Amino acid sequence: MAQLQDEIKALLHVPEASHLNLEKESFFIPQDSLYQLLNEDKVTQVIDEIDEIPWHLKETTTVWIMKNGRRILAILSFLQLKRSYISKFMERDVFDEHLPLNENSLQAILPEPANSLFYDAQWQFSAPKLARDGVHRVFHPNHRLPFTINRWIDSGGFGDIYEIMIHPKHQNVPLLLSETDQSMVRKEFKPPRYKKHVANSDIQDDKEGFSNELRNLNILNELKHANIIQLLTSYTHNGRHNLIFPFVQDGNLEKLFKGDRPLQFDSDEKFLIALCGLSSAIQEVHYYTLQRLKIDLLGCHHDLKTKNILNHSMQEALVTI
Image (cartoon, rainbow, N blue to C red; front, side, top):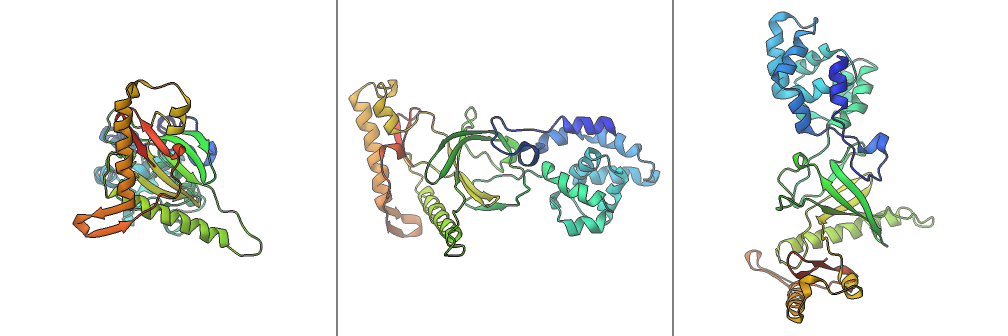
C-alpha cells in the first residue's frame, strides 16, 4: 500500500508561480494521470491483495472500480485507509462521479475518523472541469482549481489580473483553438469592502456589478467579432468572482504608443487597418444587432481608453476589452 501511496503522491500538481495557499488550495491530481496509474493490471493487483474481499468477488470488484471507482480507490490508498472500504461504496452505489461527497454522506459510508479524512482528501482528486458554454459556475471553497500556471500580472481598482494555463484534461472542450498557445488571463474581482452603516451593501453591489459585466460579456460573445475579445468562461470560488479570457501577448495601446514602433505596424497603412478593425468593434458595441435572435440594442463602453485596448500582433489588429 505504501508504494501505491507514494505513486499517487507523485502525481500531485502545483501551478507555477501560484499565489494560492499551497497547503490548502493549489495541489490537485490531474484525472488522466491518475487513470494512467490505476490501469486494469494495477487495480487487479491491488484487489488481489485485499484479504477482506472474498475471492469470488475480486473480479466483480475490479470491474466496478475500473468503471466507477478509481478515484475512490486512490483516495483510500492515498490515506492508507482500509482498501476493503471500497466495498462500502459499492454497496451504496456511490461512484467517482458523485465526488466530492458531503460530510453526511461519508458518515453513512465510513466510520470515524476515516470519513473525516476522506472528506478532506477528496478535493485533491476532484478538480473541476471548465467549459466554454456561457454557464457561470460556483465552486465549493475546498475545490482545487486545475491551473498549471497561475502568475500575477497586474492589479487595478476592480481586482487582480493573472496569467494562467488550465490543465487540458480539465477542460470539457478546449477553451482555446490554438494547439501551441494555451495561455489565458484570469480577472479576479476584489472582495467587497464592508460598510458599517449599511449591512451587506457592498456585498450586494459587488454581486450586481459582476453579474452585469458577466451578462454584457456573454452578450458580446454572441457577436463573434474578430476585434472583440471573447469571454472563455467564468466562476466564483471562495466568494471571489473570476472571468477568463484569451491571453494577449503584446500589451495594450497605451504601451504601444509609449514604446518603439513594433514590426507588425511597420507601415501607416497597417496601423490604419488595425484602427478600422477597432472602429468596427466599437460600432458593433454601440449598435448591437443579432439578426438570428431579432435583437437590436444600444451599447456604451463607459471606459474606453488606451489601457483597455489590447494589441494582438498575430492578427495585426487591435482588440477591445
